[in-house]
Every structure is written in C-alpha cells, then in structure tokens.
Length: 463
Ligand code: GLN
Image (tube, rainbow, N blue to C red; front, side, top):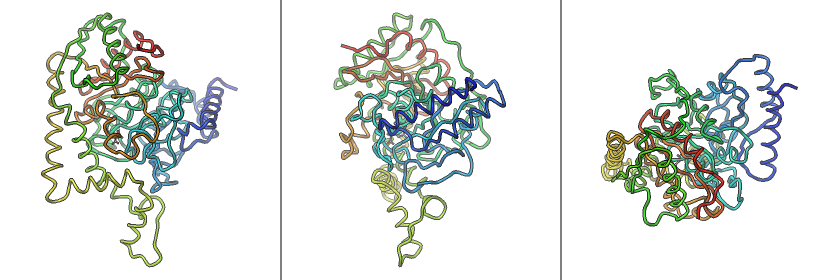
C-alpha cells in the first residue's frame, strides 16, 4: 500500500473512532470515498501544495461526494449539482475531502446545538459545547481526526469554536475566498474560513482556497494568497490592544491567558499599544439585526419546490405547501431569525432598525480603519468572553447565546480578517487569543500568529 493510501486509511479509522465515541462532529462520511480519492491522487501524482492533507468540510459548503444539508431538515438528503470553488481548489492542491461536518442549522448559532441532526460534543468534555456554528469542523480537528476543516464565518463561526476547542481558526477578509458553493446566510458578511491544528496547516489551506473566482462577483480581484515566510520574532510589529475587549467582567482565566500572550509578544520584540475601538458595544445589536435581515431574504428560496423534501397537507393549496414545508423544515432558531429579519426590514421598522444598523456598521468599520491607519499592524484580543460553556446552558436564552460572539462578530461587520490562536488553558479548558488585521492583511497576521504559537505553550494552565 502506498503512503498516501495508508494515510487516508488511518484518517478513516480516526474519523470512525471519534464518531463511535459520540463526538457527532460528522454528518456524512464514507471511507470508500476517501480511499478512492487517495488512490486517484496516487495515480495522477500531482505535486500539489496540500498533497494528502485530510480535510473535513462544513455541511453548508457544496460537495459532489456528499449531500449538503446545512444541518437542516429542509435540505435533508439534498445533493448539490455542483461543488464549491474552495473544494475544487483543495482537490487541485492534492487535498482529500474526507467528510461533511456538523453545524448549527444554516450556520445560525454559537454552540452547534441548533443542528437538526443532534449536537456536537466538545472534544475534551462531552457535556460542554464545542462552540459554533462550525462546531463539527473545530471538534474534528481538535480530536485529531482530520488535519484541517473548512468552516464558514458570518459572525465568528470559525474563530469561536476554534477557541473553545483549542485549535487555530481563520476568518479571511471579506472577498478573499470565493463563496461559490457556500450556502448564503448573510451575504454582506459570509466568508469561508479554515480550522487547522496549527498556524502552518490552517494558513496553507487558506492560501490554496483564496483568490479571484469568476463565479463569485464578490471575490476580491487578487491572486491567491502566498504563504508568507515565518519570522523569528516580532521585531517591527505594532500590536494594538483595544480596551473594549478587556472589560472589568471579563472571565479571569481569559484575561490571564491573553495578558500572558501579550507579555510574551512584547518580550519577542513587538511594540504593544493601547488603542480604542469606541463603537465595539454596538456590534452585537448591529450584527443581530443585519444578519437576520439578510437571512430572511436568503432563506426565502427554501419553498419545497426547488430544494429538499416537500410537505403537502391533504387539502392544501400552494400556500399550504409552502407553510407545511417551511414549518416542518426549519428549526426554532432559524425561524426566530426569519421572523426578526422580516420585522426589521418591514415598512415602519426599516428606518428604526435596519437602516440604523447599517449606520452603526460603518462606525464599527471606521474604528478599525482608524487604528490601522494610525500605525497599528494588528490587534490582539480574547476570541471569546469565556471558555467553552455547558450544553443546554444558553439554549433557552437567545441573547445569552448571541453574547458569545461579542469579540468575534465586529471583524465580520468591518470586512477585515481575523484569527484565533490557542494561548493556554484555564481551569482545564482551551483559551483562544485573537488577532485582527486590516483588509487583505492575512500574510502579516499569519506571521505574528506563527510567532505567538511558538511563544506560548497551548497546554499550559494560567493561574
Ligand atoms: N453565532 C453567530 C450567529 O449565530 C455567527 C454565525 C456564523 O458566523 N455563521 O449568527
């Protein structure tokens, strides 16, 4: 057996093993699909940059090998007639598409508990959540079953689970990666992102999927990102620390972990500068108006005619069919988003909510622009306000769940790039530190992250 086939077989064994133990990070997997790809790659022998890398794919990204369900009953069993550009590029680079990963329904959530097919467990403590909405991708990487996984970001859905699970998660600049084949949630925010066990792996996957795509008019007219050389220290880096991300009630472990990381970066030559992002407090209400507004429009297409299963009541007309299909097909969180989104866009409320949120978004974006124009290369913050929380803890309280995104969703609103890097553990759970960089500033961000990754021991407890 060739080394590549052996590698694919071992990955298949690991995926089956973690799923048997009840991780439930995977929605679709077939080992013959993985082994066939390895055999074909062996026959073709391309020297792709990702040759043999085993990759999981969030189930809102279209693949030919597996259904694309978005974790929703309304797309149960749905097979896309085409594959996402990101998937095509991964294959061209020699990567193996292993499986589809679990997510909050239509990527709406921060815990993966909103999947219609059951929640994903935290890879270390099964009674905790792995974060979300790309919880399946993050948990599978953290469990060591795959090398990397694609996720999607509308408001933190790669970074937040990456932080909870103790791995690296990257949200590229809006437009850096083609969204052709990513199921739309909030189109002015959505971006495909990457979970990886380390900066090197996640960065290489990002490079392979990035670049202009004629099939996505919103993709930036830039060549693919080139993998940057990793520096030996942080000389020449100015890193801004925004006070708004270190509030008095920040979890003590999160604070200690991030402050330790900042101290190490200073020792490694970085200039640390206190900065202000005064509109940070507007981010959660702004995001939770704009994202549902866009979702309510994007999800109108699931009508039982074009996609997925159809439900027809015995005496129903076409309206009855829509009602039944959507009533059965959408879970409670998706319904909540559609209702909120329709409300904030409706006559009489549009100005009070939607238009106001658009204005607030510009203020948030200008905060970032101002600090980056003022000589700051990157910002450093906690990725999340706490470490992973208990399953069920926030399920009945949507606002509490939404607040889990308080440090991650501003970057999406501002169209900039950001990533989470493991910086230690508090009370036995991983802590994520976040870099935020300017638009198209991924190369420098990856460089700083690679140094930080060497400076801190991700398994070391703080306090
Ligand atoms: N947790 C956020 C939400 O529920 C972010 C989701 C995402 O980034 N896809 O909308």
